[in-house]
Length: 253
Ligand SMILES: O=C(O)C(=O)[C@H](O)CO
Ligand SMILES: [Mg+2]
Image: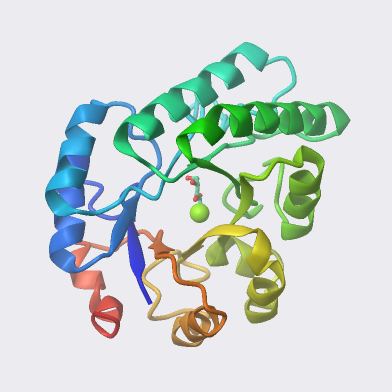
């Protein structure tokens, strides 16, 4: 098994380049992040080259989070902002050699939101393809993000079918999926051909994967047994220092 450190949550107190270095020192095989845009891409690229780690993915901007937004690309009427968010993510990802972009839908419902999301995803796929970048969509749970456009893997599969581009995939976050639908082992097996990235955290507290209602030692065996080779993303919120939460990783180094 290989693991990616999600630097949106792990080593959050460090600058992004230093967080990349910390992930390398801890033994992670790759990194991923949420919103890297305040850090010049050249600095991130230099840290990736120095450590030899790949940045697996980053997100489009969430918009006005304090004002309740969490993504722009399914919001009817926000065409210009959504395209700008996608263009920004593609440019940044291409510069640092990132493998994927999570296009964040935002909080919206209904037919117009669905049309907007599908059309923006087609746009994102077309912009990303020449750079070899995958576009990811991620259902989020309704406890953390009430009102988010996409909350189940069924809905994500429907969107992937409607977009109908070769470089759109599902971000299967075990944390969100356990909260929304459970049955993780079967779901991962069934959805595997559509999965572009897997993430995890304990449930329900979104901590390290060594406690809570999901047995990750088992889930990691399932993932490995299915022949999934890409690094799986540790996207959890450490209590205290990140290093203190990494006992689970030592079993895999
Ligand atoms: O919240 C999550 O699980 C994510 O992976 C998104 O990237 C949003 O931060
Ligand atoms: Mg996630």
